Amino acid sequence: MSWKGFTKSVVRAPQSVKQRFNVGETTKDAVYIDSERRFQELETETKRLHSESTKYFDAIKGMLNHQIEFSKAVAEIYRPISGRVSDPDSIMSEGNPEGIRACEEYENIVRDQLETLQPELEMIETRVIRPAVELLDIIKVIRKTATKRQHKQLDYDRHRATLQKLKDKKEKTLKDEKAMYKAEADVEAATQEFEYFNDLLKTELPKLFQLEREFIRPLFQSFYYMQLNVFYTLHEKMQSINIGYFDLTLGIEEAFEQKRGLIKDQAEALSITRFKATGGRKPGQPKYGPPKKLAVENKPSASSTLAIEGPPPLNPAPSHASELDAVASPPPPYSANLSPTSATGSSVARANSTNTSWGAAAKAKGAAPPPPKPKPKPARLSGAPQVEMATALYDYEAQAEGDLSFAAGDVIELVQRGATENEWWTGKLHGKEGQFPGNYVQVN
Image (cartoon, rainbow, N blue to C red; front, side, top):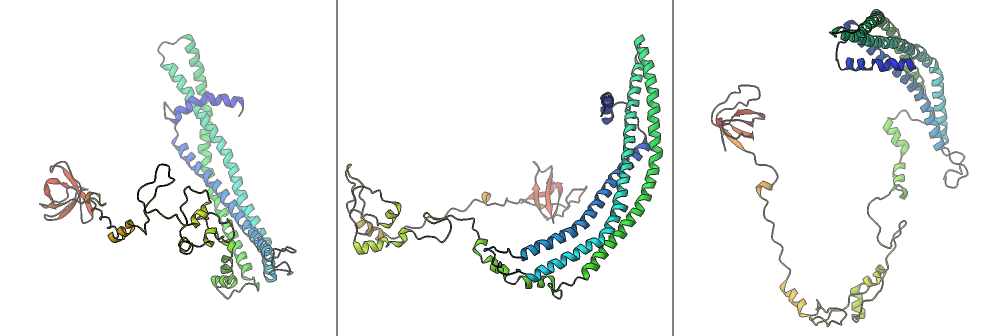
């Protein structure tokens, strides 16, 4: 934007804000407003036509190119890595000669299709995409004219408002008289410029709409026939494919299962395909590989040690052996003396649970009784709220929309009660919810 254009935009800014918020007097032409709306729709749909036709052209061309790249990728997977010890097929000349040959045949067929369809794709570009681009260029020029008309309308309304303000002034000075003379000249010039662009667009836009309809008709017909040619050519070429690697007598799923065989089960049997993300390792076990047995698992149990070697003597002070040795060795025997040792002793003596009178008394007493059952939960805490019901005392016929009709003796589920019986209550009957007078029912 030039400096002159920038200064004009700053001058028009106040009037632009007034027009946007409909403040003050604004010029409105109903005929032009309708034409502007139709022109906006034409502009949007032309951009969409150009975008979608371009996407269609790229999709057809991209589909064939992706088919070629797909066959190349499959052929590379079939072909062994020559000279690599890690490849089990490296000693063979080719890992899957039949599959590689089928990929090459398929690639040649698709390339032939791409060459055959090249004229049709060029026709889509010349008869659909390029005309849409040309129409967009025309619309851009018309949009500039419409923007110019918008600017002239702002100048027209702005100069008229200035002139009216000067006319409404009761006591005019010489300076006001000069300003009024200048404002009248500005209004006259702005009127001429605004009417020129306004009349031009009102006259020319309907002609453009008529030409646009004539433009779309052959464009759509060309696109339709070219699309038919593309799909007919693709169908004819693909129908004539006869690659011996594929068994076309079977269904798609049957042929897939036959080719796959037991490969899926064999792949899932590999250890590297399974990975656990839960659980943890036991202390001392390696992170990878089979688990190692702990030292405690190779030692005899505590009971066997006691039975063979007898109880070890009670150590006066705790040892600083490792955790595993402490687990492997049996606990020290308990003293029969029930009283604690002196303050200088190293530990507090306890009765032996198997060789003293305390153990015998515990066995004679039997197991402890089970704890009492918990009290039942109160009804107000049981989950579902209590449903309040009421019985109808009289017949009531709905007087307005939203009322609930019922007969005497019907049991109604109360949804909302009023403070008194003289108010309207809300209830539900036979799946229908509505209001009714509270003094027509009795709460159960």
